[in-house]
Amino acid sequence: MKVLDNFLPDVYFNHLQKTLSETNFPWYYNDTITGLKKDTSSFQFTHNFYKDHTIVSSFWPIITPLIEKLKVCALVRVKANLLPRSTTHQSSCLHEDHHSKGVHTALFYCNTNNGYTFFKDNKKVLSKANTVILFNSNKLHAGTSCTDQKTRLVINVVYYP
Image 1 (cartoon, one colour):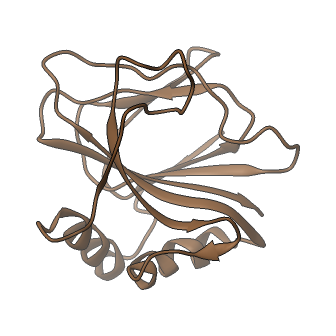
Image 2: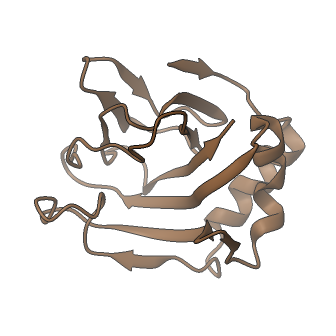
């Protein structure tokens, strides 16, 4: 696992963060965070940029600098997750993003807050704006909500490097 701070140049990061935070950005309700049946007590809002081998969002241009900097060979999925603030940290279930060998995940934090991502091996990474975590997609991990900001914004990129 790698954690890289100040991943994008400010001009690209600021535009991305501003766009995701605008009131007219289209977020869609999901009644689970991981899609697992046992993950029924939590929810989030998502925006898909890429799925089923297709760009599915007119907002795709705002994340192309992120995709280019990751040096992606092939994409599996790209989506943004918005978790609303909660009074205590709410955690998703431990899960893997993809089971195939050689597939990687990049979690890109769009805002700073006290939410975090934790891994089965007890490693924990705090949400810090313009920071990316890179790891194998079959590594068990979970995310939490935040308690100190209105939202926790994360972009999840699953890809072949």
